[in-house]
Image (cartoon, rainbow, N blue to C red; front, side):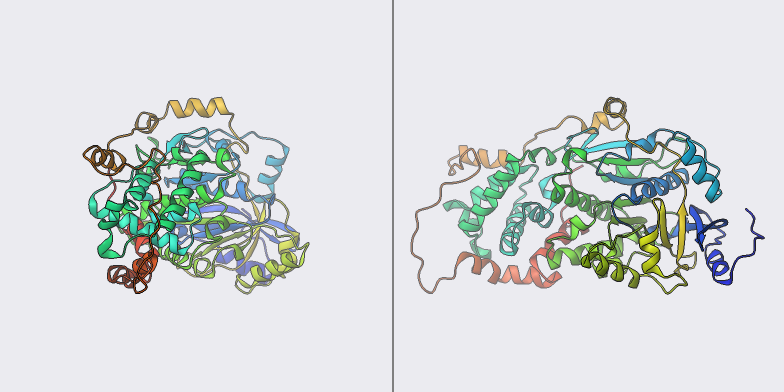
Length: 517
């Protein structure tokens, strides 16, 4: 590798900072004074991949290829990977790459011995919409906080939805799909159903109506298929191939890329479910899984404080279960500071500085890096495609020096696999028989229908009951929403984790609602 090459003192310090002795992933070669130095490789120690990371940069700067490069090497070292494929560009990881002048030139520049290779891949699709094994969640396990974010409910509506879930949990009413939830809401707003919640404050008919209308609109947009059974078991993401390589699970999202609230929240559900099921492992010699959370800004936008606190807590704690999370977005400012502070591995591609907002984001990004010999404002606006500024955690857990890096070329196909080939891979998958066919078993809707047949009031077929005639409440009677928020049980639950929202995300993350397997 030409390690005897004499480098300037600052460059030598950078090279020494990446001279790891244990297993590591090769990102590329150091850039210094306009030269690419293959004798100074830039790497990430394998055991540090569960310390989380950030891959950021403007559109078209090479983030997708960076994900592919890292995923390939993780798979090769026996680590399963999860990739969210927003644009359909990552399916090529399953096929060997094609050599051309650009690939050969990049490999020569960074000292890479490039060999075309495909990697074991599993293709998934939300609700089966698109090319992939259907990924579904039951409403019960998805939980009220994540569902509230998808439905864009306000705080009062979120609290009311949390109360509905609490009722269903305590009564053993399984909420498998959307019609189950609608049936429960309709029952609780009926004359007989209101008595069920009287001891904990009741439920506002107006709020329940908003929730029902939101659910109806949600279904009208074709969202019902994402909820139901068989529910996807996230243990499927932890598999290795017979040859010992990690399976790369690619969630194909082109068919739902116009529904960002949905797919970003589903990604959070996958993480929450992993957290729920996995045992503590401490600091292992390699991660159990590395999870790439693409378009991460969508998760954080319009999120409540409690929701953000829950994400922060999940990211902080899930690494002890052997899961590394990489957020992928345009700038570090897209990620809340409490989360950003936990991302020890950073690959920052080029940023633009065309507008005042761009320049503000650039300055904020520079401040998130350790001090270095580079003029980072100038460097970050001058990086080419496939180049990045890198700092990672060393084998001792200390940050490495900032390194401008020319990245390696992925060895798998840098482009999509066509639809018929993806469909063939899905049909041949071992998961196809377990998840391809939706199942509608007895759950809350059917149980409530039985009660109706026995003489209970009938919710209409759309799941909405006719509003009760208006009556004037006594002046000293609180509104139903005030009763819910002010009830002793509500306050007790809220105190346990800060808010009712916090209680319900804890329910989802920490296993207070067991899932049916």
